Length: 112
Image (tube, rainbow, N blue to C red; front, top):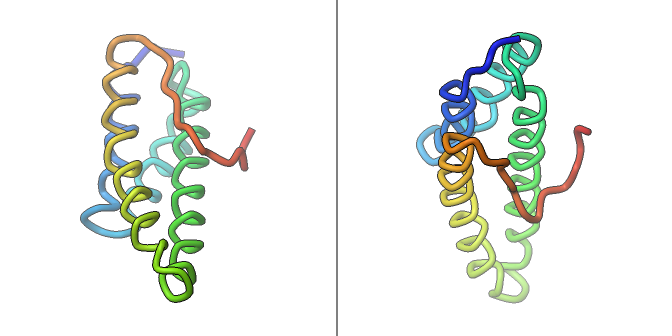
């Protein structure tokens, strides 16, 4: 296995494609993880973190929709989910580039 921090950083930043395409932030990291997890050191762990985070963000967004209709709080929660989806990939890409361990809070562990 080879060390490739740049590819790990790109994988974390590729989540931002959600803001442009809607689903690209899930598909691109999934493809990178699936093709490189046996070739790049740490890719398996990072890929699982990213996929778990993307699924969690999707679930939280879906939960916010009925809360908008019933309570009105859903808009605030949806804004917070959007901010998390924007800020956390950038912060974790910076951490990875510095050799630190990334952390995605509020992530449900689907892949272990």
